Image 1 (cartoon, rainbow, N blue to C red):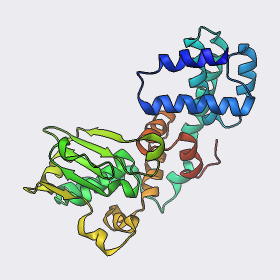
Image 2: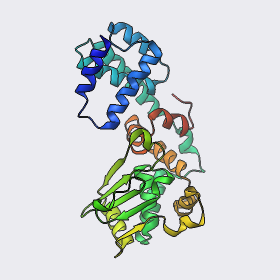
Image 3: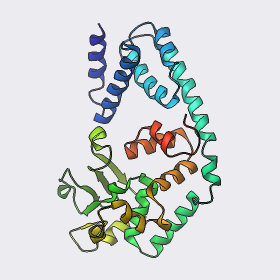
Image 4: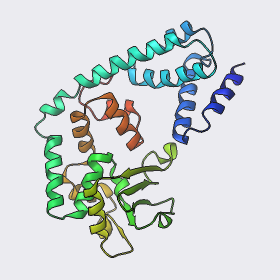
Length: 279
């Protein structure tokens, strides 16, 4: 019986992207591991099970999948939706109220300061540093993501073991094949439409057919993190860029966006990049 529900659910989701399909499967398997069945029984039992989960981020992720699972299969879903709404409100409120310590921590600059410094790099035409710091601030990349090649056409971005920025007419396509959780989430793409970023990339590549962003500096060390830190604003490390962004744009929506950018679940962001007690 449960298998019939699963088949119908996965068939309904076959047009979703692979990451979303994978996440749904992961959440259903988590529920199975925790409660020894799939969420196909009486709704009140399902909701009572889910309400025992202390971690609100984990609960919300599971609720999103289970609500969709039950809706697709024509199962009662009202109480599940209500718990999802309540959990989302609790989590959103906690995101609003957390990270005060980061904002008060004078060892870390403000987000506004970082933007000001980024604009200075642009005015100075320091294209390499501008590109690196833009990606750290706006795409929330890790160090290794910046070990990339800039090319002129997507036809040149064919190596699955290389990250790329592809130059387009009015935008740049950032392709990540190699990053920390690539085996879980697969390749990631960001279309960057910033006019300043597009100009910086074009100026940096100049008349060359392609260019490595970090270039020769990687030859001086095997540690990409050391190279990136030398080129970052005020030599701030990548993890502190993320803390600054999270503290400034302190909302569940922003954390979810960053989660997708980095290939990091929201729970990990909460537990590892904030000074408040984990949710």
